[in-house]
Length: 535
RNA sequence: GCCAGCGUAGCUCAGCGGUAGAGCAGGGGACUCAUAAGCCCUUGGUCGGAGGUUCGAUUCCUCCCGCUGGCACCA
Image (cartoon, rainbow, N blue to C red; front, side):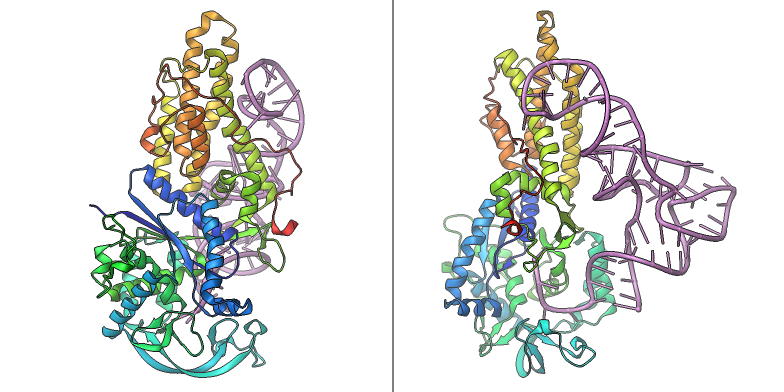
C-alpha cells in the first residue's frame, strides 16, 4: 500500500451562506484533484466545515436553536454546494463530529504532556463582536476603539498558550530550503519577511468555558475550550486518523477507538503528510507558521505545499453583503450550468492573484470559448461524420496527431504544476487548430465529390478523434462536458484518465451517437446573470 | 509609515537591452459542415512621468506619480 495524494481545502467557518470565494477555492482544488487522478495518482480530496466559535453560538441563540441544530441545518446547505460544484471529495469533515473532538483532545493531551502549552493570565481589552483581544495598537488617536469592534470590555482571564518562541529559525530555514512549500512566491516572501522581522508571540489556544462553551473542552481542564485555529487546523489530521492512517495514529496516544473510525471494512488509508493545502490569502499565516510548528511538536511531517489563492472582486469592487454586489455561485450554475461556472473561474483567474468577476466577461467567455469554440467544434465535427458516413468512424488517420500530442504534453505539465489557467489556454489552442483544419480541408466540399471519399474519411477521423482527445484533456476542468462528448461519441469508457488522450483511441467501424449542443448559445443582453444584486 | 509587486493597444495580459506581441472587442472579405458558429485579412500603443547608464532601453539604475498586496488570530 502506498501513500495517497492528499489534498485539502480550508474548512469554511459556518457563518452564513456560501459565496463565490468559497466556491472558487473548492473548484480549483477539485480541478487539481481530478487532474492528479487523471494522471494516475491515488487522490484523497478533503473539504469540510469549521463549526465552533462564538459567532456560531450567538447566531444559534438568536434563532432560538441549539448550536448543534443550527450547524446541522447550515451544514446541509454547504454540503449541497459541494454537490452542486461537482466536487470529487473523498470525505467531508465537520469539526463538531465526534472523530474530530477525539483527535483534537488527543493532540492537546500530547502537547500538554510535552510541555508545549502553558497556562497564563491575560489582562486586556476584548471585543465580543470580533471575538478578539485588542491591544494598544488598536486604539485610535483619541483613545477609543473603532466602532467595528462593538462593545469593548476589559477582561482578566486565564488561558492556555501554545509556545512558538523557539521555533522561528528552523521554520525560516525550512521555507528557504523548500522553495515550493508556499506557492506562489509572493506569499512565500511575505511569510519570510514576517518571520524575519518579528518575534513570534505565543498563540492563545483556549477560551474559558464560562465565556464560550461552543467548542471542544480541554481534556486536562474542562473549564476551557479550544479556540478556533487550533480546532480548525487539526481537521487535516483528524481525517487521516479516522481513516486509520498509521502515521497519524502513532502520534495520537489512545485514539484507536474503533467507534471513531470511518473505515468500515476498508483498509487504512496512508494520507499524511498532506501533499497540498489550498487556502485563501487571508489565512496563509496560520498554515505557513502555526500549523508547521504544531505538526513539528506533534512529531508529524509538514505538508508538502501550500497553494495560496487570491480573492474575487465584482466589477472592480470588493464583494460585500452591504453593497449587495455578491455573486451567488448557485444562481450562476442554475442558469448557465456547472461547467460554465468552473470554466470561467479557472480560465479567468490564475491561482494567486486577485480576480475580477464581471457578468459581461462571463458571458463573453461562455459565448466565444465554450459555445463558439469547443461546443461548435464538437457539433460540426460529429454532425459531418453523421451526415456523410452515417456516424461510422473511418480508418485511422494521423493528420492532427502531432498537434494533439504536443497539447497533451503541455497540458500534463501544466496540470502537474497546477497551472490551471495556462492548461486551459493551451488546450484552447488545439480547439482553434481543429477549427482551422475544418476550413483548410473543407470536408463539406469534398463530400460533394465521390472521388474524394478517402480524403474525406481521413478528415472525418481526425475531427472525431480530436473531440475525443479534447474531452480527456478537459475532464479535470469540465467533467460533465467531457462525459457528454464521450456520450455523443457513443463511448462506454470515461474521459478520466490522461493516458486516454493518446492519439488513435477511436476505433474504426465504431458508430457514434447523436450530436447536440454542449453549450447552447444564450443571446441575451448583458447583466442578466442571476445574483443577489439583481433580486 | 515600513516591505513587496504592478502601471504595455478599448479590455485582459505576454515580452524585459537592439526602437513592440497575443486573446477578446472593433472593421473588411471569402465560404457554408456547424450553436448565423467557424476561417482569412485588418484598424488600434510616443510600452505611467522625468532623469541617468549604454552605440542603442519598453527591457538596467535613480527619483516622482498612481494602483495593489503584506505588516499576527477575516473565504
